[in-house]
Length: 264
Ligand code: PGA
Image (cartoon, rainbow, N blue to C red; front, side):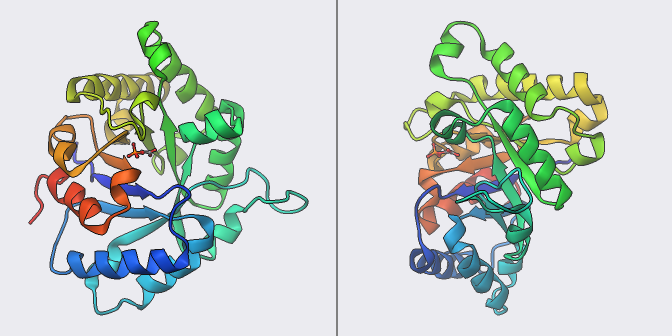
């Protein structure tokens, strides 16, 4: 199965418009001339989406600029109205957003997002033809208690409840062990591969072998230039969701380079 790897920078609450501009200008100049067989995605804070969209669409001199897709870090499960502080999927479409990160462990742990809320957001995103990057992952306590598989299964079945096979084809799953996020501790490639294979097996149970073979499953959690190649060489790992190491243009580029087998 030929799945195109997808490398997504999750900037979290970092980089307003002016830092976004600095990053993109530097990243595009470094990217020039490279030809990666990977998809590149940047997820800035909401307030930087307009600047990112502008920069990518006016950078006609740099062919690769058009290959970079824009992601939002969240969306509302509602259409419009009295939801102070929320941003709707149709608003995101105006900024040429194609992907939206949903179910990130920080949204789950700090902002109380449940599987039900995440499921509602995935459905809303698909109504607007946005592609969810659907995050799942266990805490260290859950792993140590032997609950890795049950936690992942619950998150997958809850998040994807009533999602059709057609919509699943537009979803990317990001497996991110919570204990590896922002900690500098990465899952070993064996731990990551085992979890990814398990995720694929749950998708096979729910949607069949064909859908499971097609879906892309990214790894996230302290991915760096130095560990990208080993992780991405695992058969069930299809790219990465990167936080800290994607805040610097060279480091993000090196992860893509090192993690893409056929990179030039
Ligand atoms: P990290 O974050 O790369 O800084 O560990 C990953 C994520 O939260 O998506």
